[in-house]
Image (cartoon, rainbow, N blue to C red; front, side, top):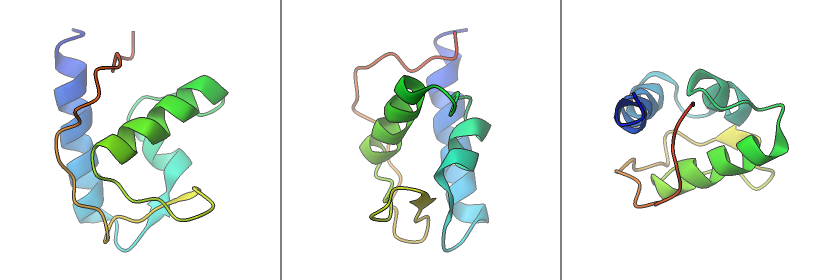
Length: 83
């Protein structure tokens, strides 16, 4: 199961970028992708993962700028799992 989560999460992020233009709440996106936004460490990891995939965040980091983002496979070696 751990092997499937990163590819499914990446696929969902690409779909979100196509569906929600020009921006969407970061907390909403992270909760859809399976990150627990109430836990600060999970929120930090989620933001880092979105940025590593090419996602652009506004200055206050509460909006994910889908129109300005060019999503690509993350090169992050950090564990990317729900488990």
